Length: 253
Image 1 (cartoon, one colour):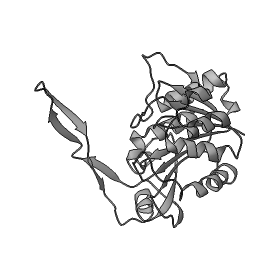
Image 2 (cartoon, rainbow, N blue to C red):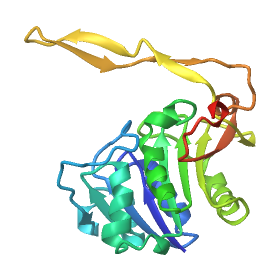
Image 3 (cartoon, rainbow, N blue to C red):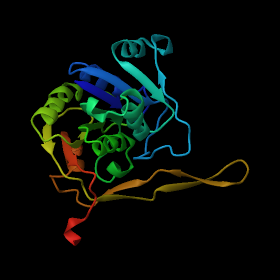
């Protein structure tokens, strides 16, 4: 089995190391990841930028865990976005033959990608590029934002969940979000209706110029609905949401 792994937190993130360790049990792993954090990039691609692609060696490692990662998989980094990573994997590494890739796995993202966050997610943006090429794709995220996020409760679920989604369910694209801490089980969910408000904070720099930073407050429109992704991760369950590239609102046709 030929597996490509990417993320939007950079190749040194803890989440991608967990995924590589787990996915190596299923087949050969090729990691193509950004050389720095690319969160919130959605499906952005680099149209007017020269993309780099570097095949890492153990000499590129800073810590022992990074060295082990490089020794156990083919690791590439790029100055591009997560979506670029998948395009580079298909076209530069696998010679334009997308049929050679059996599975695209993205993550584990530090922070959930449930509800409307799915639209902004670089983690899922990579999955959408894979889906465009009919490559089965799974995006993994955990509801914890810290750089040293604890994946120990989530990790035992990843391998059997991946096997189930690729061997039993229809080959497709899935958005998987896990709670932080103890996990009660797994549920199939739909996307919760929500929005962000009070999204910008205004500042003034030392030159007297105004600038803004993104903050925002997440507003769930249906907090009691137990079939949504948000309810599940807030109540200790892993959420599995099947997603599609087709954004047509069929109810209006």
